[in-house]
Image (cartoon, rainbow over all chains, first blue to last red):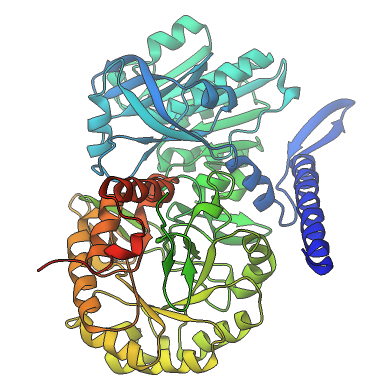
Length: 326
Length: 303
């Protein structure tokens, strides 16, 4: 190697070190900007603000590097209710890194039919196992529903940016509002928040009682639960957003998380805005790859005061209410 | 040990497997997951001069053994690519091929002019399937004269070899390929995606916001193969074949039909390690068949 080449090599190494340092610094900055503490009547309060500056790109790139390919995730348990399914997958590495709100991409068939992987939120983690909860709605989920214990699946994960969990939530009340299969990521979130010492209240709404298939499981855990059905077969009769409005008269939570149909989340976002409750939403999209390569799963998101198309798989699927253009 | 290297004449590849444009980001996205040094080459996501937002969603819909995309070529533009991506990419021992786009002939030339001064690019792949805004959205790839015009202008400007990527949405693919060759193109890659659409019967709306999109994946492989064979039989410049390649066997079919190298596209979205798997399968095939140099099988179809 000639001296200029050695110098060039050295400079490149320095540059890469600098990049990783910068990325760490940006991550810290990002966290700092998101949370803003202040005092009101002698009491410490927190507000959540949007990150300033173009920092999220670097922050997110770091997260997507955690992707692991597990081509032998063994199905250890299955459960189903009508069109809803729960699969437990043994995948030690993915389980150890998973955070609530993150998702996995499942290859349904090693042959190219269906061609693309399907995204599923991580529903729970138990040691080396993760669970996914899904509804049979198309060819991918129809075929996935046929899988049995001892079959194995090729999965990628954990993907995306999860829910923001603040260690200061200990002893504070948080609301989790899920509609239909949108309850999927909120269960894992409830587990982690409970472990942290937060007071978790779950709002679980659907069209009728048979869609609230996780009710028995939740009842056993002992969360504070509020059910709603549109036909009144269980709990509050009406929309989960109306149930939420009613309960907000008694108590305003520290934070609100939601996942469900678009129309439902839009209503919840409106309520969160009116009541000034900081809130995060987990969005759904058709995904090609799940790891930021195909640019299919975009959504209108506000960044740095501008609306742009942002990849849900990479910078989401969880976004702050203020970021989402409904 | 089989020799997998390929000499395109204007570019030497360590093996015939290249990641296709639009399915591998700008090249660095998958660096944490696979060793880029093992690839024959990488074609970047299509680059226009300026950043672009792309189409509204839905941008993608699955079809039988395929996918239809109307992503709309969003991107970061040449400046950010050169500053942020290229310095990292050129550290890898693999051919970096930049996919060049343009809304007009002038834009293709501006992109080439800008990138000519940068180090670390092995060749340009000219995406002539971009709608020309000055000509009512018509793509150069659909017309032999428009193809000739843009390729010859780019060749005059370019300090690097130029591979022209052809669209299959034409009546006579050989005619377009001959135009590209006549204009001085160093190589040809084919095929780009097939124009397609999907209908949602519940809402009676198109499944893509853009109405039309491009079909890729295993569904198009037999047609792509036929076109590669036809073009290989007519032109003298080397051909890079693509269209639904998911396995070593798929890659070999294209090579036997006349492609010197191949690109892997849609498969990358399903399996980020698809290119590596294909390289391994090519090696196994050569060992099984006692082939010492993979170039020997190019264009050996007996018919």
